[in-house]
Length: 506
Image 1 (tube, rainbow, N blue to C red):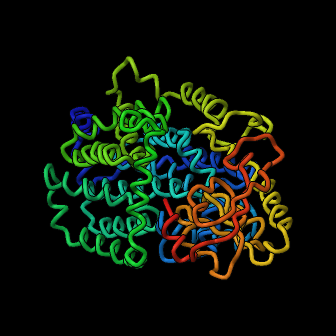
Image 2 (cartoon, rainbow, N blue to C red):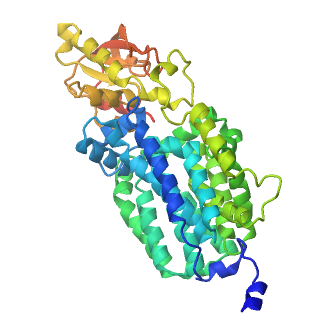
Image 3 (cartoon, rainbow, N blue to C red):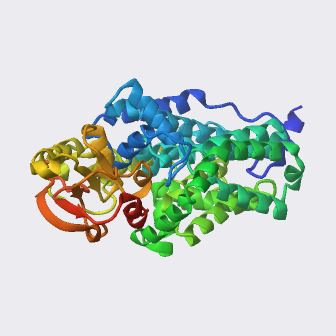
């Protein structure tokens, strides 16, 4: 027995023994769950600070206009927002509970991916720690947003795919289809993952996957679950296609194609960046999992070329991090960089991320005062909404009597109208921007318009445009609306049924 043990080759990430159904290492339950618990406590502690992020206000508003689909997304996140807002109306902390739970699930899934690849306690902790400390996942865990749930669902799909490669248990392919069905209710991005993965399997294998009825049955589950949303899109002129074009046009603010990968990989900070590059290389070297390495590269190329946002690639991070962590655990990593995924670097990274990258609202509101408006400071757009809306109410109530009787409020952006619907639901408020444009149009018998924003698009349809005020959140924090003008538009010259389609945009 001793001789047999001595001659057993040491396992490596490409060891086929791990891909033939043999038991995997034990799940490092204690330390992984402890790490997940620490992150959950941190997210919970700051979940009620500041206030609603602009997109969260929109999701709550969308939930109160519940439908099978929206111009800019499928229905799951608005449904979650409605559920949490019904449980505790107006509670930001309760609204964010699903985001915290999703982040905890992501940490556990990251560890399970490392375990499935043959990683023991250290590899599991390396991967789970990379997820727990990544700015993109910490920021996502703080907000109820589509970008919070989508990467976690991708992690679940990749875990099921890796597990199927090892066990060939076809129920896993059915489960992957069911998880994909859920992901399609959050975003449509996972279609790109499956398209590239199937092509990769066809080219490099394992081609037997494509002959499994369970794979196509799982795909059928995903498609059938998405039919209501697709019907909504078809019935409303496929606005999601226009939204994709709008996102591509905005990619210039993230550096376009040149900035895509640097910003995307920066979401994992230094540790995540190194693990991502190394892990992708390790997958490409593995004949059984090469298709997933190709998929990781293909997903990055797809979203880069189509003008996607850099964080779209985050769903592949847990897989490639896990592949790297297993190699590191077995001592196969190069000596010059293997120090990076060690606990001192994790600790220093956590301090830097929380103190400098500030993905969480830890600093006082006053710290944001008088800072210039710039992309990246997401906390600033959680501040001041409840202070701004009273200015709109005051301006509406101060309208001349002849205008006040049948006046409506219209905004040039979807965040502001969502804030008004949250904090001043008595006002008849509308917006022609993004998904809010499909919530409804002003009634044809309405009169004057109190407008917030740039009235250039709407002004040609009115005979009079007058400045009547400006917004002030009283906090000196330059969020999206701070200092924005208020206009009174009178003398409408066309019906809303003609105006709305002309000014509506994504």
